[in-house]
Amino acid sequence: MSAVTVTKIIKMKTSIPLVITTIHKGVFFGYGKPTSNKTIRITDARMCVYWSADVKGVVGLAANGPTSSCKIGPAAPALTLQDVTSVMEVSKKAEEAWIAQPWN
Image 1 (cartoon, rainbow, N blue to C red):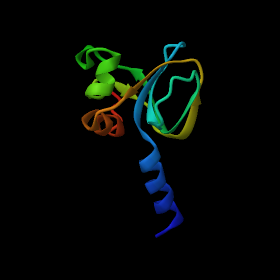
Image 2 (tube, rainbow, N blue to C red):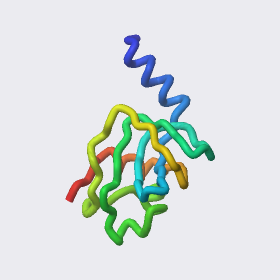
Image 3 (cartoon, rainbow, N blue to C red):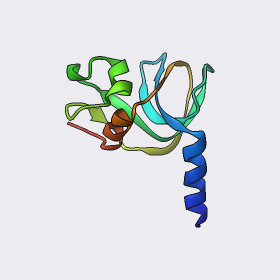
Image 4 (cartoon, rainbow, N blue to C red):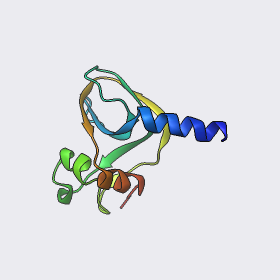
């Protein structure tokens, strides 16, 4: 097994998909550990620049994921977010929608 494969397996066991909001009105998706801290580090981090009404609010991004009328940016390898206001666990359906990275 390669070092990259081992690293991915370890990440999968210790990180889960999350939607994070910040006091600065940022909405992000990535893999990390749920926390109540004001700072969180996530990997494969994406930003939601815009979500449409059919998402049914920010919690809808965690429940069902972004739709084709949303704007989701490309993934950065890792991101540390400051001033966190919420950390939401993401459904499998929503995770797949985030990975599809819609930008309309």
